Image (cartoon, rainbow, N blue to C red; front, side, top):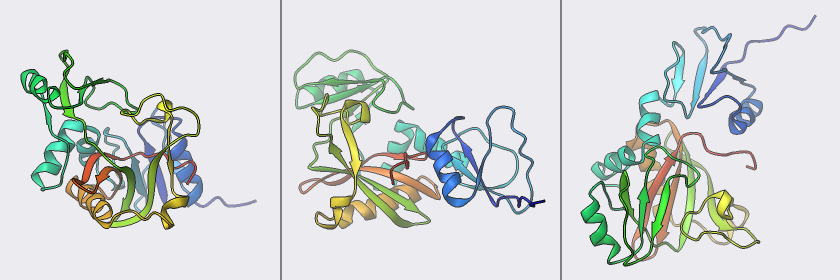
Length: 239
């Protein structure tokens, strides 16, 4: 009879059925904690890897605090915290009048979801167009490249760049997978990531109080590195 040793690492996902959480568990020999009907019982040696959840789980030593994940999953709170830490973020406002002034000078994003993902709840306004009322507004950041910098314990462990798929891109401004954008990394040895983007990713994850995170950064030679968001449950299926 084989003895099954209890794993040291337990992954607590933001939702049941997370593919990335399953891949992580497989890679490190861990187990998933179900959000519904869980049979998990804490033991002293357990480490709980919080994969994007803001709902606290009793007990265990938690990697990525629930408060830190809460800050990171709120776009407005992320911008506030990072700006206070002198980390560059897009200009944003909840004031409709201010948004109308901004759109007179360039492109604008109207956002209806503070905790949205995959480009949901975003309306893109071109220069000079009429702006409807939204929860908040973000000035569009012009960029030459966009990176995802994966950070763990203050160290960059992996970097990707958002690239167009071979087929036609549906939207140049909302760069989601559904709109024809993917993350690539094989080319980065020949086209390295600017050091300022790597340093900014590390600083952003630290400022939000996270042990790990995947920081999306817009970069241009003129404006440097701007943090767009920090992901606490990033896709890792292909990497």
